[in-house]
Length: 433
Image (cartoon, rainbow, N blue to C red; front, side, top):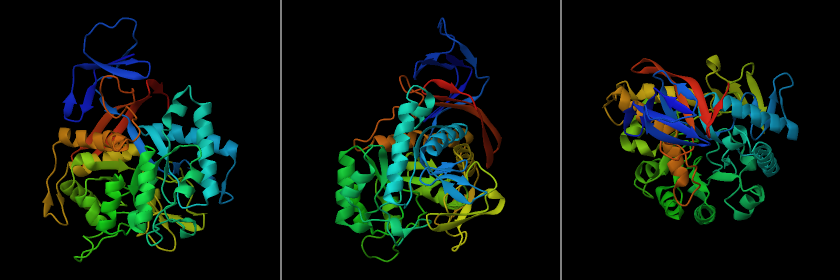
């Protein structure tokens, strides 16, 4: 297939006059008008072409939770079982791809270890059963978030199911080898360092969130291979304003050479703090995520309970919070990747008052669009590849990369843009939704 008449989004700008030739699972760039016989022509009619988005941190959608099962609104319980999980993983893939995601790491929480093992086994089964179609290629592994978090920073997780960093515990839950992203907060000192070193030796990407670690603890784990901050400014994120220990987690995130996840739903991190983060870090250090839960892309749920934590759905179904703590403790998000893209583009294209900076200027549309695209795709792929991590071989419009593409229109005006997705390709396959 040849994709023609599109506006291609690269790291350094937008380009026209380039066709995308899809051969099998890969893409190749050629000058428009180049003769390619026996290829179906797909006229994009001026639409934008972006590298497919990476859902590196999402717990579920459409009433399916990767770690809890399928929620039944009538019975107000989560239902589990192999058949339910196989149906749920298929539905999740279809829902997520409709929002521009072309690769996903479904994420766990602080839950009983047997539930994590079950979820990973079901993911392994789903990938094997769908290895010849896009749904099996969509899942790149899983993200282990809650098992090793600091009990002093649980957020919406149950500390009953948290553990100190331990290689034996990790090996027990990762019998499938599908856990490719793992949250190991540095709070436990040498235990955190040892597990980080072990995971990095296996090519697993290590992040840190739900942490109140000191800068010194962070630095030790960074030197051991820690490479990103899990949902920066959430979790919560500890900080030390006094002149002890080099600072806290906040100070480490902003000064060490690590990358940062940002939940761009407009609630978890206020827009002005997103701009503050961009003012301090390079845009190539930022990874835009959803951290969505089963409420996302679903209706009809107002309250629920999962593994001992009660949740309430907020105004207009736009956020979820821990019932007993109120909106200052959010319970994951309901946002989708296309909305994350739209929000970030909007924040970057309007002037905004800051906290540490008096004013953040608006970026021009093209620059903001390219930054937004890399934050939703390229940067995440680059983070995962660092420190001998997995090479997804995607995230860029570049010869030989997997043909993971998002095609759509950008509507609106500076400060209020919306991405309208038209077509998505996963490893060269055009997806119907």
